[in-house]
Image (tube, rainbow, N blue to C red; front, side, top):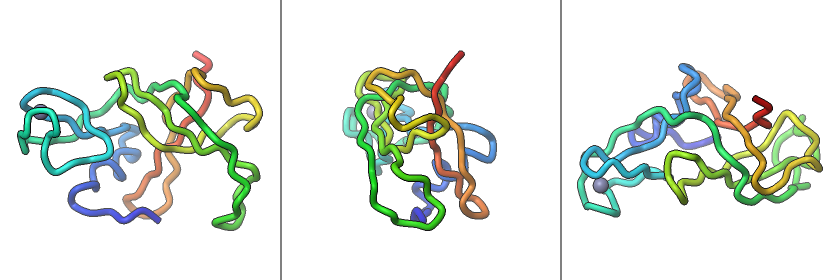
Length: 130
Ligand SMILES: [Zn+2]
C-alpha cells in the first residue's frame, strides 16, 4: 500500500479521473517524477500536477517471481516506462494485460489504473494496440 501524503495525493488519486498526473514545474515547465519539493532544474517551488498523455514505452523490465501479496499472477512484470512528454521521464510500474513473455524493450504501452483503496489508484500499463 503506497504511503499517500499531501505531496503525492494528486498522483495516487489521478486514476479516479483516468489521469496519469505527473508533477511539473510552473516556472520552467520541466516534468518531474518521482515528485520533488523543489525543481532540480530551476529551483522554483511552484510545482503542480498536470495530466500526462498516459502513453509510454517500455524502457526496461524484469520478471518477478516473489509473492508479496495473495492472488498475484506469477510471474509479474516490473517495468520502467518512459513517457513521451520528456526524454528521461520514467515511471516504475507493472505491465499487465498480456503474457509476461511478450513484454519487450520499446513496447508501446498505455496507462490503466487499479483502485486499491478509497482514493488510491495504482497506475499500471497495458500494451497499446492502437
Ligand atoms: Zn523548474
